[in-house]
Image 1 (tube, chains in turn green, cyan):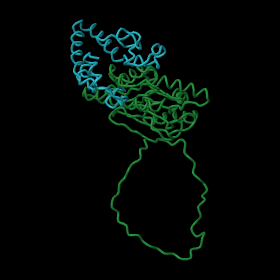
Image 2 (cartoon, chains in turn green, purple; image 1 turned 60 degrees about the vertical axis):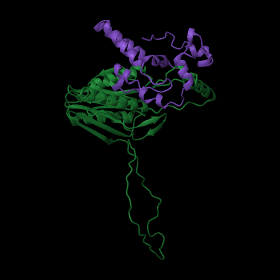
Image 3 (cartoon, rainbow over the protein chains, first blue to last red; image 1 turned 180 degrees about the vertical axis):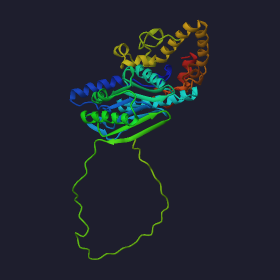
Length: 277
Length: 131
């Protein structure tokens, strides 16, 4: 083992050491009938639209793992910079890590230039990184934001191609959402109209695509202000139980009652928040 | 400027034959095909990027610009700790401009936290050419 490290300086980044072993294991497992566990995808509907003063981004909140819902309320609109947000479809871990890396890079870049970052910069960083990994990083993104040149909206595919458009949809429910956009999009919409349009597009994806579901998240970005509305609309509500198996008070007769109060004093109160992101 | 090996997985001993003492037994399948399509391109990514940048610089500013920069790279590359210790390569990073960027090479497989360490005596002897 020591001989391995004599010549080669260890590099960081992806390590391909186990690839051969994994492919052998996979073929052996397939022979016996097992299948290798799949990565968690988001199987999503995400979309974005440019309106008069800025951008509205929308996303559903279901994450699937094969045929099972892995997360009923995951957050697919990721923060990139105070004026730029990014929705992610595809493999959940890939979108999460990619957007976090680009967010850090953009912050360093903004500190180095001393200016507010532009959406085109984030777009270029993302496309160069995704192209470098030739589509093996499964992240399909909708990037939107408002910078000094106005509102911009980009869609970025896993292999690194990008499109700059006034309205974009991505994910497994993209066709349903795009149908709504193609019918009702107009240039120069007002904010409420744009929010309603995005909400309807995501709802179309939720109701017509198995991979999308649960709630609708919206993010409205205008010059100097970001409204992260989570959830904007609960399209899929879980039902409420109509019956109850508990007995009402007074079902059993009370014969006698003894009350012993416990004298406790409150020493310390802490609040530990759960990570519901 | 280090040249990028053509068949990236060819044996790396001297004279191009397998160095069994250092890298273990050889197998034709390991040499011919990479285990992942990205393996070769990732191994040579920094080298290729540098080459591309130098050639653009040569086209824009003339021959002396990349020549001078390569001299600085060579000097920066020599600032290292002992062979078995991890060096931060700060000067090299600054020259390359990667001191204010973050990528997967900084997050995954951090060499400072690797579980294997080179045998110190062997590595120093190799560096001094005694091995």
